[in-house]
Length: 387
Image 1 (cartoon, rainbow, N blue to C red):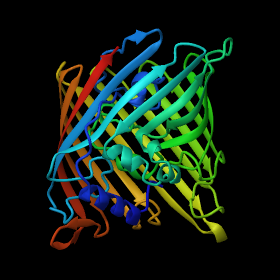
Image 2 (tube, one colour):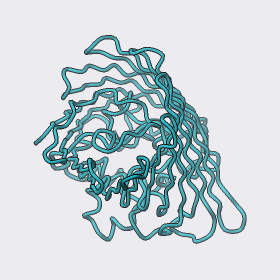
Image 3 (spheres, one colour):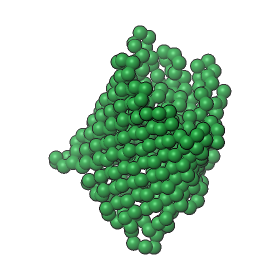
Image 4 (cartoon, helix red, strand yellow):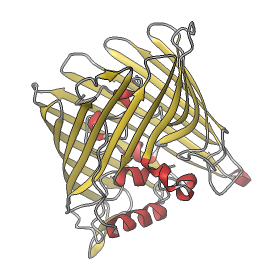
C-alpha cells in the first residue's frame, strides 16, 4: 500500500498550500549510477556516461512539469497521479544529485534530492517524520563486492524497490506520469540488506531482508523478506519479485504479500514493449484481509534520434480500498510524445485518461465523476556528467 487516500489528500493539500519548492541541483536515476536493474525497461533518455574521478561518479537532474486537468478540480490536484500532483500552474517536482563509488570491493551510493517527489515518497515514513533530514534521501547504501564471490554484490541501507516496471525518475521511464501499479500496488523503497548474485550469464537471483514498506526505521524492522529473479537475453528480459512480511504501521498482526512480474521485449532497436503484473494481499488481525491486483502493458517506438512515441494501458482492481481508500476498479491509458533535444534535455507532451467504476474524481463545482483527462508537459534536464 502506498498511502491511504485520506492521508494522501492531506499531504496533497499541504503541498498546495506550501511555497514553491526550493531549487536544487541533483541527478539521474538510480539506474544510471547504481547497478542496472534488469526488471526495469531501458532508460528512454540516458545521459552521457558519467566520468569517474578515482572511482567516484557524479550526476544530476532537474524535473518540472505543468498539467491541465479537464475536470478543473477544486484544489487543482490530479487524483491518482502521484508525482505530478498539481494542475494549472508549473511545478518543480524533483531535483537530485547522485554520488556513486562502486568500482571496487567496498563502495557507497547516495541519491540526494528535493521537490514534491521526495516529500511524497517519504510521506508515510515514521523515521523521516522524526528525523526530517531523511526526507532528502531517495537512496543511501553501502556496497560490498567480495572477491572470488562470482559477481555477488551486497548492499546495506536504503534502496529503491526491485518491484515494478517503472522507477521514480521520469526520465528513466517511457511515459512521463507513472502507472497506477507503480503508484498504488508496490512500495517505493526499502531499508535493510540486499544481495544479488549472477547464477549464469543470463540468470541473476537476489535476497533481501528489509523493514516494512517505505520506512527507514520504526516499522517492523528487518521483518520483511524479498526474493528477486531476472533472466536476460538480447531480445527479452523476464523478472519476478516477491516480498513478504509485516508492514502495517498500526498493527503487529498479519503479513503483507506482493508478487510482481515483468517481461520486456526488444524485437528491434527502435521498438520495445513490456507487460507488468502485480498481486498484493494484506492480512489483518482476526483473519480478515484485503487484496489488490492489476496489469499494465506499454510500448515505445523510437521515430528518429530526436523523437519517440510511447503508449501505456492498464487496469488496477483495489478490491477492498486498501490502496486508494475506495473499493474500485480503475483503468488508465496514456500517450506520450517525446522530444530529446540532446543527451541532457528531454521534453514530453502527454495525454492521459483515468477511469473508475465509482464516482471518484473531483470535478470542481460539479458532482464527482468517473473519469479524468489530463494533458501534461514535462521537461527534464540531465545536469552532468559532473567532475
